[in-house]
Amino acid sequence: PGQDVIWCFAMRCPIAQKNSEESQLVGAFTADGGYSWTQVELAMHYAGPLITCSTIVTTETDSTRKFLLPAHRNTLQEDPRGSRDHFVLSSTSLLEWKLEAYIPQPTNARVFLHEGNIAPGETPEELWIVMRTADYDETDRTTDPPRAYSSVSRDGGRTWRVAKPEPDLHNAKSKAFFGRSSNGTHIYVYSDGPPQREKAPGFPNGGRTSLRYKTKIAGDTWSEEKTFYDAGIKNSYPTLIEIAPGDFRCVWDSGTPDTPRTHIHFGKLRITP
Image 1: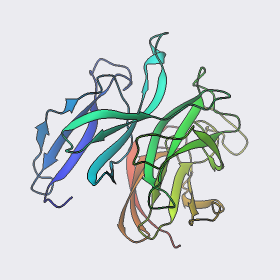
Image 2: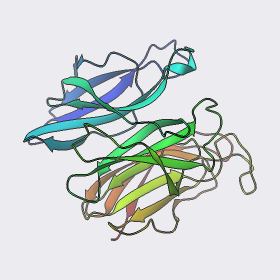
Image 3: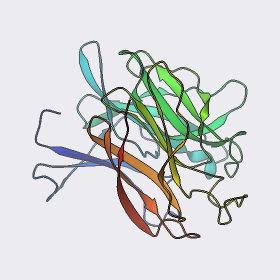
Image 4: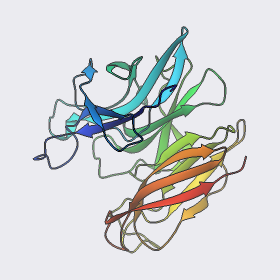
């Protein structure tokens, strides 16, 4: 902010890895609108692997501007002594990152919380994170029922409430987008149906087909489900950026009716309060 510089943060993992579970955070910047990029060696006080699918959120505590980046790890996949934790990294410079907080697990039964997005809440001091979910021990299963989970911070991201299910927000083990427009309306964009490889009535090729969305005005409930994109093909991993109040530009993975992720789609979405 305040500079003619664009930053890019990404995950980097060994090419021999069969997935991205062992990734590290890397960064680069451009000062010419994206024509050329300079890689930056980040100072990481969090040394473990991480996965992130989110944008950075700016907050302020004790008159200090702070950048927050939600991420998770899944070391339990390859290590019986590992864990599945969602956490938040913080930085005051974009160069040096530390572990700011963990998202507390539900007390009745653990949930695999991952790929969360942070957005301002409904009051000035509030931050809200909404996360993708799966069963903690058997990650091929959804929560029952399949729902996103959320948590709230009221101290700039230092501490978070115990994660809880969002009864109105569907999530069947698929990355969704959660954010807030500049007019104060929250938006949740998600893939409908069952998990990607599970067939169900109306989903002969499995889930992650149409992209649906819901909106929420402060103090109100979530809206009814609305359709963003439906073309009879696979669609997943939506990411949105607001260019004007309520006017978003979107990018996501698309495929064929039975094969995911064969190409990228771009689109526009306008919401009203």
